Image (cartoon, rainbow, N blue to C red; front, top):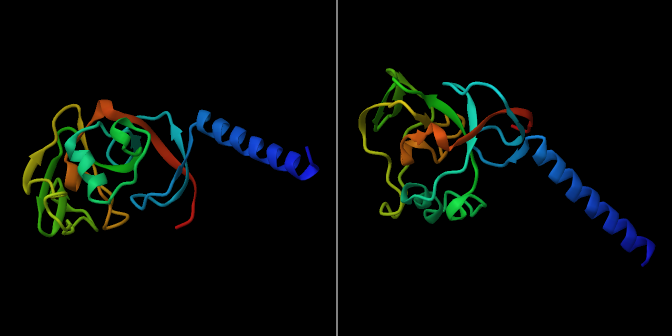
Length: 174
């Protein structure tokens, strides 16, 4: 084996080891624009309004629609869906109102939440407009960071049992 090949093998091995170690320590790379992209870490803290969470969406039509409409890449969660990282906008007891101007939580309009039109609409429709009370065991995940975020505006409430962890940024580049 040549010296160059040995160096390459050691470098690749070190990179694989670093990625596995980082994952085991709760680090994840977030490329989504729903939160500032960068390096995030899973944290052990209660999840509430304002938290940022990671979850594997269940293999359901409402989540597959995001991939079919081109909003999501394939991933390693059930149904080849990607792991998602989203901010928590509403928790049990909150009132979510969806209208043409955007999404309101307890009467407060959230910035960057006006639903976008997607063609063909058969693939992806906004969650039904109107007033929705968040039930026990549910949360709404809505990004105000980027207006094109694919979030609860389209797929509705998420079961708390589907969440993996709260996450916090370690380093971001926006």
